[in-house]
Image 1 (cartoon, one colour):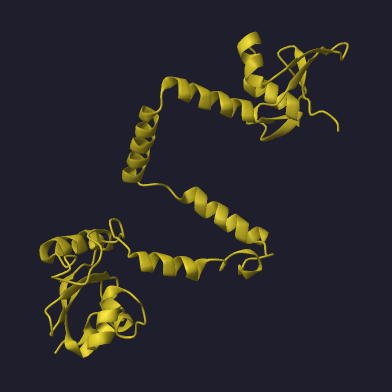
Image 2 (cartoon, rainbow, N blue to C red; image 1 turned 30 degrees about the horizontal axis):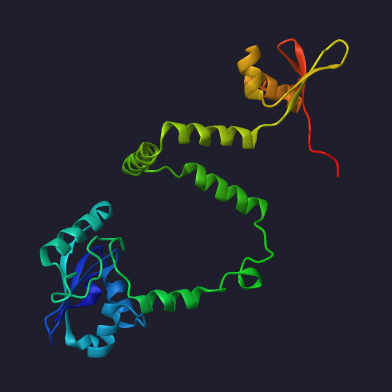
Length: 258
């Protein structure tokens, strides 16, 4: 008889139904804890329902492989899934063909509708546990640092790049030009070109990009002048600035008064 307390290590395990021979394969960082969670589970998954229906004593439990390197745990689970094929309905209880993912899993219409009804309105408005609350400055700093450190793996970056390329290939050059133009227009701010001596307005431009294209003055310098300051790397600080390229520059609001 298997002494589950001796398996407090990572690995791949298998349940086998003594009644019908169907199997379930899973992975765990602590097999002992995972076994207990299966035993006490009230989940509504296919395998959890089978455990409750037959009783856990109607299943044999065995450790297929000890995997001390957690970085290959999912890879090893995939090996055993491919070996036994428990995702085939007549063989086992696994519903996913891909280890660590629900990709390709087909949910019954009843399951989808039941989930929708359970979630409808749960996290909306005052029912949301974070409703009316804000993070402390310390918490925001921790979240910010965590996001800065988070880096996508080379595989993820490659997938994102391939997806972007495929999407762009589906779009005509004309459509891409329209999208680019719409983005520029949406973020464009009218800018006044001002004579530094008389302080009179020489011209009002539609955007900083238009100024750059027509006068050849750098975008960064104009934006700094509009903001009234620039950052100096050598002196490590912000300093006043209202002119660039021989002119003063200011953002202007052309919204008509009602």
